[in-house]
Length: 395
Ligand SMILES: Cc1ncc(COP(=O)(O)O)c(C=O)c1O
Image (cartoon, rainbow, N blue to C red; front, side):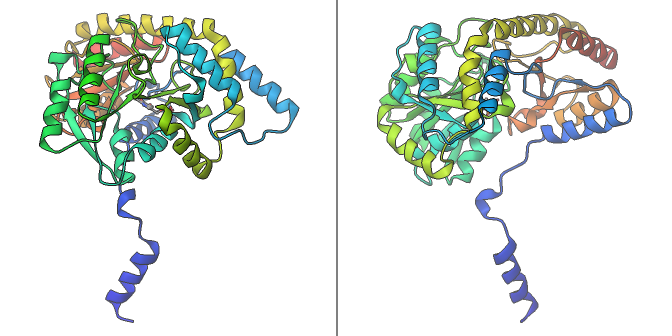
């Protein structure tokens, strides 16, 4: 066998598919560098990771312990435990005064699992789906891996980084779109869409036959004004949410969707085949998490304090240009006054000030080099220390 044939055979047997060729998360490199500093005895303030420092509410942990003592942890139905689906429907009534049929609620493996089910149920390979930039990178990477084409639409500070109907329709006129996905409160910007902005965008999308997906994973963590759910605005919108952020249950891997009625059965069939069901213990814990509101509201008050510390402290430290920190636990700071490369800036800030943050290049291929994302999900003491360190470092 010739060398060329041999090489071809090896590629055929061992090579990865083109669709799996999605970029890694740069934040992982920052985390690895922070670990090295800590291993050498340094104390790093972690503002790079987008997860709550607090554990799941006690009600959730106790429910999981009780379930474990009973012994058997069986599969559940593919759409999820009925009492959890009912409890989520009640959450829509209590929080948003919106009636949602529990039959339209699907339990998923975090919101990450929801994206896969939603995209598979809504789109064909080759379909073009709009996502906003800056934005959460897996939106576009999951679409790519599933054979769809993500269309990146830039948002600007003129609209508080909300996608407008006009911008969406302009992109649609260029090459037709099949869907659009937005998140509010958003990652990495921390900005939120007003009810008017969301209503107008849904109307524009649906008027043009573009399916609307709303990532509401940071709901509950809204400070500037109450977050609005797309479920209250359109029965055709597909809503994605999760127990990861407000409920502090990242590692439990449980989330949910509110899906348009005609998609319930197709999504049920997909879930049956792809996963059978979502981990049962996590579903049991998630239902009990709704009884831990006091605990979660106390954690939210901590984020409110942290946000204030950064909003007041960062300008004094030299970071005087950032987007409105409306919700989630992120502050997206413009560092172009200091650098043309936010990755290099984050690396130096970590090495010299021992503050870890995420360079914007992960979230924005166009202007990410000018921005750094700071997560304020840790203690107030950490936030004060971070401000002091950055002030010394930049000063
Ligand atoms: C905007 C956004 N959506 C979705 C996710 C995925 O979260 P999970 O799969 O834990 O629900 C994240 C995680 O950071 C996120 O920031």
